[in-house]
Structures are given as structure tokens and as C-alpha cells.
Image (cartoon, rainbow, N blue to C red; front, top):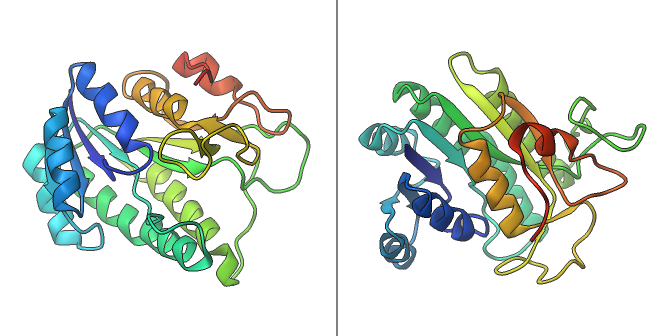
Length: 234
């Protein structure tokens, strides 16, 4: 299949793109860096240098590849997880997601898979499953990430004409992440296991939301196991 990966050279994209190529998919991947564009090309993917905030450029990029699947892994955390980084990522998830959704609709893409977070549930009975509500964001700058997540999930799952899939990943651990080992906060997931779940979501499971986390007493991964055939091994 033709697959467009937005944020292809990020923490999860570095594992996901090789998996997609190895599975036989024709992959186009976005980046803002010439060096990372060459890296993507070396993997066998078609690099696309584009600014996710530029709606016209994103539309042109997606229309140019006519993907059957769009995968949204856009973040802005290259400099860490400080308040400014989190705020930038929240804004990117609001504006960049809208631009990507509109581009996918223009290209008549049938399925859009997007990155979300499994650590944002409101207080309630445990373990949290996908039917449980997320916390309600406030105007506090500390809630910028949550506001972005809420808007991302709304756009992906409620836009007519899109088969929208939201993957609520745990905190990543493993190569090229903030935590090299399982010392990541709970809920957590190996970045390679998260990439495998994303690969499976290309052609498995109905639209909707999935928790993609290690076995955890607070957050259930049962739906991903059942419908995606996923297991949380590294």
C-alpha cells in the first residue's frame, strides 16, 4: 500500500519506517531536515521536506503521493520535554493535525492513524480502557499537551470520510527516546513495540481508539491485543 508518514524521522518513525518498507509498502515520509531526508531515502522511503504548519504545502505533499494510509507521528520534542517543548507539540497537534486531515481528505485517503497518549485519563475506576474519558484541559499552559491531544483525537475520530485510528501510546522507552530502559513512567511501552502496533493498525482492527502500553494495572491494553493482534514485547 501507499503510506504517508508525517513525522517519519522522529522517535517512533525511526523504527516504524523500516518496518513499513520491509513489509512491502511504498512509503513517503516527512521531515524538516535535509540530513534526515537522506536517511529516509537510504531506507527506501521517499523523503518529503514539508512544514506541517503550512496547510497548502501539506496538501500538495499528500496529494503528490495519493496515499491509501496516512500515519500521524508529528511532535516537536527534539530539544526535550520542557514546558516550551510540550507547548509547541500541543500547538502542532492542533494545527498540524487539522492540516494533515484536510490533506488526507483531499487525497481521498481511506485510513488515518495518529499518535496520542495513554497517561491522560481522568480519575476513575482502574484499569482505564478506551471508553474512559480523558482529563478536561484547562487554560493553564501546563495543559497545552492535553489540549493538543483532545483536538487531535476529535479530528481523527470524528471527521466524516476518514477511517480514523488513535493509538494512545505509553511513555516510550528504548533507543532514541528519553528513557533507554523500562525506567520510563507508567504507563510505558517499548518504542519498537509501539511501532509494531502502528504497523498492525495499517490493515487490522476497526476505527477507534487503542491503548498501546505494556501490561499495566492502571491502563488496559486488551483492545489492542484483541483487535490488532498486538503484544507488548520489546
